[in-house]
Length: 437
Ligand code: ADP
Image (tube, rainbow, N blue to C red; front, side):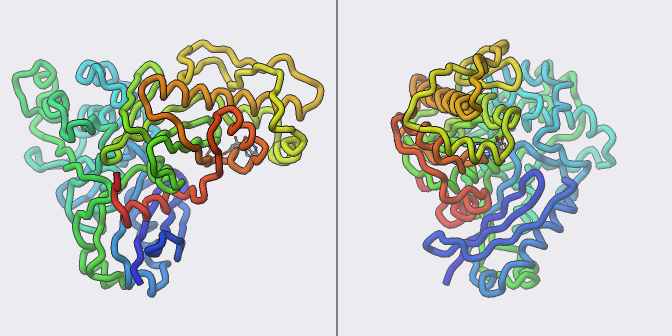
């Protein structure tokens, strides 16, 4: 029997899932991560591998790892971190945001304070001068997934085109753009004005970018022996947590989408056409010849939580007739401002009038979120994305059956719950199949 392993590093824990040739789960291990430090990431990875049954480890064909998007660290050529990692939500890059935007003017994905590129620039200017590292020694930028994979295969400085997107890697042409290779963080062109401002002897080495799921190298022999893993086991290029969750859902064809009904509403649509639209905060990840177009609205479950607890959500939902259209035209937000599908930073929450019956009120909110979801997919289509075919559902709201019926009525396509939602499952699938499109 052959097995494939996916490892997910999330914001509060790590999980490993092994699958068989039919993509059924055969083993699962998990551990919590109270603090985000590379030494603890390594301990967690070792704990996950240790806890797998020997019958599985002995027959592993490939392993892939996903990390949190834009969580990265800088390390020396032996992979030793030179400072604390910069986590996905670390926005100290805002201190260099003007410079980021001057270097990469038409790059909405890198132009945010938390992007990998903003982190690179900030680290170069703020932390690098304090790092005791010979000036001619290379420094490697590694995303969380790159570094954890490196522990397994031993080849430094390798990433994938999902993790590298927010660093500025051009996923259309599959190369680093000139503005990035000539940026202050990589002063290869001493003639540019920006370079002159930041002249420094050090160069941060940008990772080589591979196709997610592509085999990089076999597992290091010492680790194969230590964990009882097959010596032939390959370590594959990884991905990010949210793409791994998309792959877990089972969405495979253009027009398939995953709606995540968490605190906010996030849409992801597999499309033949790439869509990037800064004004709506839309951008596309590459998946072989296809594109994974993503957008996020500020509406979502956080608004429900303001009015109902979990038990109320459960029993009031049962009193709703999902085939009936609610007469209320709400726009549920926790505070003013929306980006997608309506770009209006001042859009006011609309939750009036409030009926006496709480089930009617809930019906109105659920219907409004369903309408916003529908408008979101319509917007993606207007911008050229492949028409919607079916919608898988993830997140806390996926357990609400009447809502599923309401959403299907609004979207006019079948809506179902994702059979699998764990990112580790999606990453195991990636290790098994690669980017199939
Ligand atoms: P996140 O990870 O974004 O915080 P989750 O995916 O854990 O969110 O989902 C939590 C959200 O799910 C809550 O905001 C809650 O309003 C919503 N939720 C939970 N149960 C239900 C339900 N039965 N019906 C609708 N929404 C629900």
